Image (cartoon, rainbow, N blue to C red):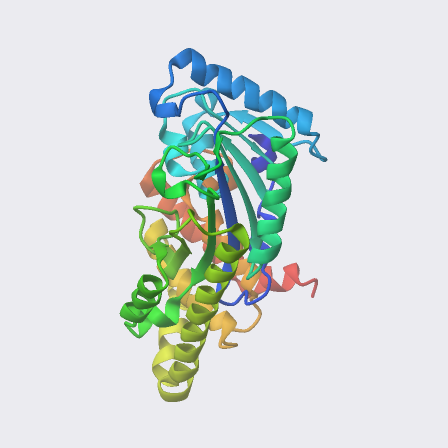
Length: 356
């Protein structure tokens, strides 16, 4: 896993359009190989054959530069956690016990999960509000592989998938959103109403079954059958724009009517992060969310969004131990995390980064 251990940040974390609210755009396609059963009904020999077949067809597709390839059933649990934290694989994929793999680009914008819930799950992630470009990129990847590998497809239903909710296009288009003002103002009901009215799934930082750590939420389409890829993309973008506008309106109101309380909250979080001697990842994420809000609103100087985005991931358990070059228990990690955050929030460190 040296490809990841030698890097500090994925390209998609460096920002983009509406980057103060939209951390990333992701589009995922679910596909299965024709004439092979779904994984839940496949025998071990068939699962092994699917992994070999898909691996060889990815090579035949001629991605340039070549993708990194990792057999997950032969990967150390620590490295699996690193892949999950970087959003290269899903948590269920990491925890499975079958033969499985992932191919991913060096900039981590593309990953192809093999033998997750479906035989293939291709995803592209880009920074900011960039769903149209992201959808175009993942469809190009799909076309490359489809020219070498026949998919399970029905003229009546579209692409056939293990879960009926993915049948049709097999597409999930989603946005990762930083929504601290909605949380501070306790306006979660407005967010859930938008998602309900527009038939969107609302999930936490790491997808289904997770909570909104760091006030980060993911929204994505529910419907995949009877609607084409462009319509899905536009629908999620429309919902995303509504949520972005809601978050920004609340931020403006907080600045206008509650600036003193907001400044106190943000600067207390900033100082606590710079002074604490030990901190859990959950508490650190919560405080960094407030700091990121302060940076976006211009209430904290000498720190930029991408630096905070970086920290949101580098303080997670597997990343932190990778940065520090050793594995350790949770109590020691809490001390390491506090020290690492302090280093990266100190004025000297920031000035050096900016070359001053």
